[in-house]
Length: 316
Ligand SMILES: NC(=O)c1ccc[n+]([C@@H]2O[C@H](COP(=O)([O-])OP(=O)(O)OC[C@H]3O[C@@H](n4cnc5c(N)ncnc54)[C@H](OP(=O)(O)O)[C@@H]3O)[C@@H](O)[C@H]2O)c1
Image (cartoon, rainbow, N blue to C red; front, top):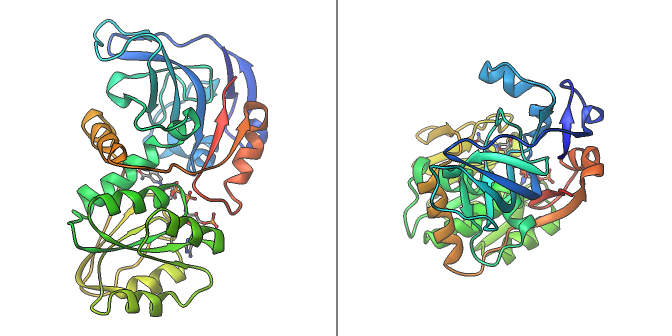
């Protein structure tokens, strides 16, 4: 199979198209014929070898990146009865030792795989799972967001943020979105935010206090920095803040506000819940651009430049 693989960790130049064996499919796995892969904000860290450092695992090379992907089922493991050959699926697996989704085939746990919900395209489904599940874990498990509560989403036009706006609206929250740039504000409004401001330009704290004069109940933070910490002053005493591990600088909570770092969770129950919320009405997974496998270094560079939603890689 064709794959983008690393012979050693390093910069974007270490990403090379190679011919590799198709991974074996174990009993509880499915083999996916990958058509598109998500390019995650965290992929450059994995490319540089920081994941294996943190996880204390020994990497095997050639090393194939790609936590998220979508395509069709090619082979079903003998203990799997939920899928059949040809099903259109999406899946996620973090640092899969058998290789990630930057390849024509990926063998992943059936529990981390699902039929594609709604009318999402393959590219939209490919970029969805990790950020979608991270948004959902943050909202439902970490923040325990309730209907009628007010929620601030910081980084609202990014991968997690633009999905979090739509999921939070479906959970009945009132959403104050802090997005990046005029185009980010426009996207956040289009996706249902009750109010949206530019985190780099507008008077954010003033706008947040106007939105919720008694303070907001909760915040989901996907971008850190001084602007973030100032905006968080609008969270009420007794309120809650959640941010996924990896957000840097780590946000600071005002006095009397609970703050928790968390990791997005995977698995069948959570993916089913994500699909259920997506199926409840029109849902947009925003793909800023789709690049070819040959343009993978450009895709990694694009992560460091202003963009909306997600970046996808077409696998051919
Ligand atoms: N622990 C976990 O389970 C987990 C899972 C997924 C992701 N993560 C981490 O979570 C973080 C966010 O992930 P992501 O996929 O959502 O990344 P992302 O797509 O890069 O989103 C972050 C967004 O924040 C925006 N932003 C930056 N500063 C801002 C400000 N002051 N006001 C408003 N918006 C601002 C960025 O805009 P620009 O494009 O204009 O800079 C970008 O759109 C990353 O660090 C990622 O590694 C952790």
